Length: 408
Image 1 (spheres, rainbow, N blue to C red):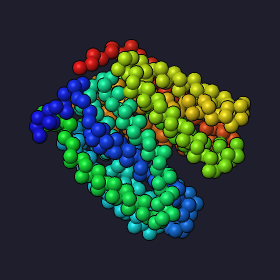
Image 2: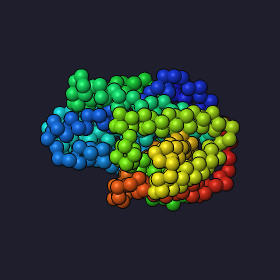
Image 3: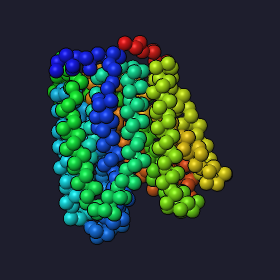
């Protein structure tokens, strides 16, 4: 086993097998499967639990809060004790939280169990990214993250469809029992891949001191720049998620059954961008592709803001720049994560967790702003997305001129 582990810890020399990619993709997909599966069941859940309007929606926001803050704990823990044990404990939290959701007797209990579920799920997502950093450096790491994110993007496409069928066949509680089964399966699969952080590479400082270092990391221009680029992007992305149901269905009168098709266009765009990034990053480097992607983000975001306020072009005048803007996720997320972790290999778990917390925290803010500024038009969504796109590009200026990394 030790020779196998050493092989996996030779950055730049690893030839990834399909099994390793599958397990890492499964771990990274916990953010999506935990919510996308039960979206079609929300009306039935409200009726079944006799919940007030808005309380079931709080199961999403409470999950995002737990998911965002929880990563800050798992990062330093994994840097000290290793990736696999930390993810395993997180999966236990996820399994318990999912079972609690399935057994919840009221909306308040469901909201509470969703927080526990999120605290477990975020360990899988944040630390699987750190595992990629353990295995690969520089542009190769960005390439691998793009590959994994491409596979992971399948979940938002099929999740609501599968969840809808489960609701029809077995009811909404069966969705959470399925998540329990997925958690158990992943727990077993986790122990079939090697630990990527060798004991001699672990951070031995006390956990309290390691967590206090988050403040120092935020002062580093590279971390701030890379995290800012992804954070502003996520703010725009969640503004899109919160604003498009109203903009498309209510304002432009798109039938509900066709909203999924417009939503799917963005998912396909993200997958395409990730595949392009995976092919181009070894030739052009993650920093250059990040800046190019952020520039497209900014331009398309400003165009979205203009069409959202003026109504120019009607529905498609809004859809086209909006799809282009959100699709650039494929050039921003993997490259920004790689750049942030590249400068702190001994704290890859903490940096991945910090960046992830900023991403989802910004997403909460972006979606909240759309609701607070709502005026009956797509304008507020367009404004938030325009500001987010400009912020994404400006953040990359903090890392402009970074010396190109030599690949192993």
